Image (tube, rainbow, N blue to C red):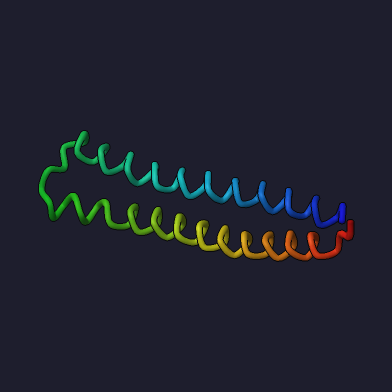
Length: 89
């Protein structure tokens, strides 16, 4: 019981780290979106050509982090369910 409880806590910390990473990746491309305007790129074709690689990388990192987080949530839920089934009052 104690090992599973510790595993659930570790999984939660890993999931929290993944969410922070996803947030940071999103903030990164948003920052560069505004930074490109600040640098003087107003032409939509030039702007989109410069932003596209940053946006793609940021969104890909975010989606991968969120996907892994959801998988870990399922693992955590199974551990909790298994733990609650083992306790007898």
